[in-house]
Image 1 (spheres, rainbow, N blue to C red):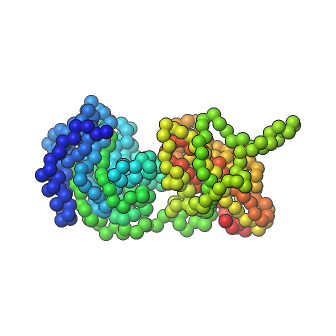
Image 2 (cartoon, rainbow, N blue to C red; image 1 turned 90 degrees about the horizontal axis):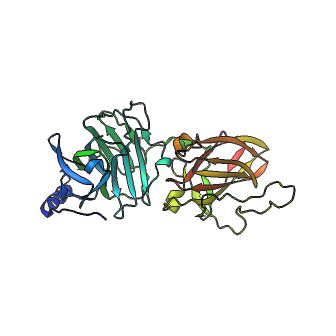
Image 3 (cartoon, rainbow, N blue to C red; image 1 turned 90 degrees about the vertical axis):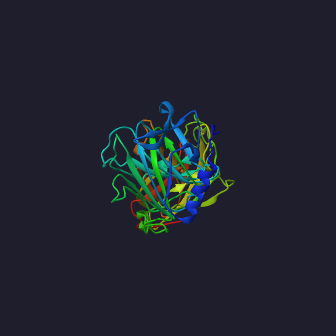
Length: 385
């Protein structure tokens, strides 16, 4: 619930009229233009301009009123007075569960070579899929004191993000991955924002169609899978599977069987199999499990190497036999690539027999994005389902 909202009908009408005419829209950081929580937000004068900050260093959110953004340029200034992930959401749905997010990681001085300084990630079902979006990170020149100027150029499926250096984009996103084409704008963080300018439909000749993504030409990625329904899988549980035993008591199995219902799922442009798009988020760190399966046909018995990225936990089987298990829990000693799902997470031998080979993956998740990315080292004598 957002409390203490102040309204200025005249200001909002003028804003709406200006946007219709397609002119630059200077939106002051003044209470009349925003929905916000009065217990956390204060509008001030900073460096001689209207600005907004959190009360007593609070993390806050503000939502621009009566404005729908589709394509164009968004420019603003931000001063990093606190740590965290200050940023902007745009094209947000009315329920604030879908949209696009660009943010700065603010945890002290960085050099332009630190590639985790900036990030773009889609918002799906109210959750950032940042950990499925490793490719959409970049470095930038960041000032720890004073304004940092940000410019986002957004056209259809593409975005270019400039930070301080307006001659070269710091981050290029060839394909925005959110589900919305238009929507609201909001800001968040424990920082100071000012000088917001919208330039509707000013896209600097940036194409609206998706741009080139490097995985497009790479036939080694496994892109076609079948997916089971998801189910609750509380912490402390493990997959029950047949194991060697001297007493014959370990034959019970929870692996999928002939009663399992499967649906087709294809990899997205970056070769990610994105279960977050399919199943959404889960509340209260609820752990879930789903199964993925695919078939690899081999002309002969041979060993290949499988590179597998995953979030958060996997059990990999080939032809009914356990092959690999792994955890990628963010913030733990077992995390891989800082808890992100990348093709660099794991690499292991894949023993293929001649003919048909079934690959089965149990995938558990509780934390942000849910998915896998899989690639063979080479596909000589191999074809995919």
